[in-house]
Length: 250
Image (cartoon, rainbow, N blue to C red; front, side):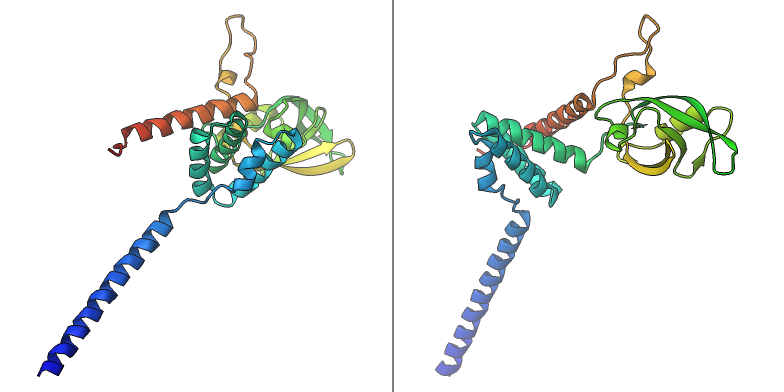
């Protein structure tokens, strides 16, 4: 009888230990799933290096690291940016954080290519004159610039759009505005005797384009870097507002 009771007691004890182990294991798995990627310490140190070349290389490597896990790296870099006391590390971690935020969620609004244009015509291989769009200027840092479009290029088509004789520039402008920032388009180009197809990733259309200043001229447009900074500032404000609403530990 006593042997049976002892065996039953030992069996119950084993069950309790097994349950505790499972519970601890579950907690470890849960906490592990919530762990954020750790910003490489070597890169953080190099961000504050005394030589510019080392700082620049570290910033580039940190951006490549962040692209592997956008959600986690954004959170980790946000914490680094908010806690580091080194001004150089703070500045460069902020730039990487901004790039990742914009990469994760493209700028809202209408698409924007970044060219000035005029109506033109070109002769195809069969000698037929066809409507086109002449690029008269390319704004630096825009989608057009990054896609290597140049002044004097002739745009003969865009994606599946074929220009008509009435208003090719209007067709192009309306098509670009129908797209969203981050959308990719294929642009058919006639450059001298060459026929090219270039891919452009659209940016956000500046609101100033739709405004006319008091003198009736074209408004001054913000540079792409200024647009990125404005969007990032909005993101920071929203993020800080969310943190302010969270209950603080006592």
